[in-house]
Length: 130
Image (cartoon, rainbow, N blue to C red):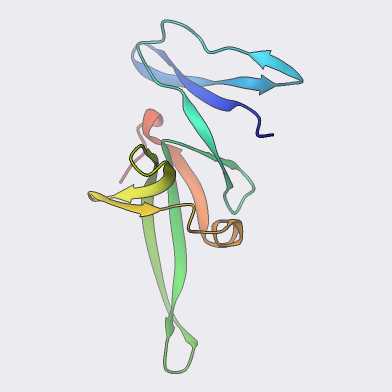
């Protein structure tokens, strides 16, 4: 059975202050904070990044990988860095990564790929985005 696992951004003076974690917390159930400027809670995706940190909806994940020459399968030394927002696709019922109007399946990436190539660099509620 999957536990209920959400977090909710809390704001002071219209700026991000901290996270409130709710759901199945510390062996009991903790509810969300009411009246928090209408901010939505963010669900845990079931995935973790390369630092073993839980990935939630709204997180900004960064992939960093080295280019490889296909002909020789050797590294080129060139790094490719991309940032994506993690979003839930209502129509398809799945998590994905979103950038520049494009939605790509996140659950198509296995936990091994996420652990190797992706790390969380922020969240849309924290105002960190490129």
